[in-house]
Image 1: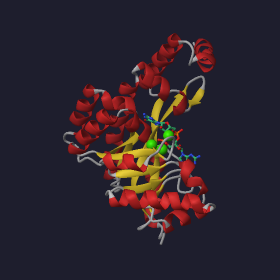
Image 2: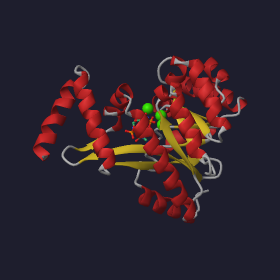
Image 3: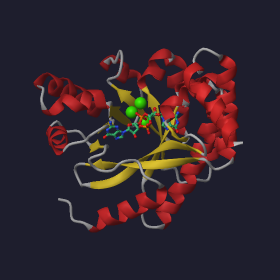
Length: 278
Ligand code: C2E
Ligand code: CA
Ligand code: CA
Ligand code: CA
């Protein structure tokens, strides 16, 4: 059985993007993995700079295949989007995030849990209705991270879905800001709670005055529109210090913690709370 799975997965790697039947095979495999408990969530904290506390964590999907070992989300999320399996994966993720958030709260850590939402799902009415139904009876504390490109590709559907999610008590975050054709003017039409600056824009901030100026105007505009700003991919204390000077609200990255399983996150949050940080 292991050899058979392995042979199939080796072919996925080389031919995934040319043969649709192999995409479907990978999706069958992902659905099997979902039911077999091979897929799990890791969590990465977002550190608020003003009070040095963690008020929010991001859920990131992990697939540990019995033969292949870990498979990175970047190598199956795209295919899941193309085949439609993304809806099942995202509904599973939301349910798990709600459950884990309740467990964190029970151990004294009342944090918002952010879930990544593929742009394709914004145009899926059935999915959007389902999400609103899932949220009923929960005390919210769930944030949906939506990429800026998803919004740019289909502004009408995106703005309507975002409005519906927010009306249902969900928070909304614009993810990967600064990748591709970002435009400050897009921010105007987006009624979101949070803006996440992509790591490509964040990385150079400690060195370049130009990058600092671009970031500063982005942060100021986001603030004037009522959004808080999170910088992604923060790996050094220099970058953290530069971001703090620019008025960035929170940071996320290996400097604070890698994405970790729920048990490790709970331990991290407990340790963080006990250590004076200011
Ligand atoms: P993303 O939403 O932009 O997530 C941030 C990615 O940056 C994560 O990669 C995270 O592990 C990584 N990262 C965090 N801190 C650092 C850092 O300091 N330095 C560097 N170099 N990287 C850092 P990951 O977990 O491999 O996820 C990749 C992408 O896959 C995510 O990008 C997201 O677009 C997608 N993804 C992950 N989980 C899900 C999911 O449940 N649903 C959907 N639709 N997409 C997901
Ligand atoms: Ca994200
Ligand atoms: Ca991102
Ligand atoms: Ca990304």
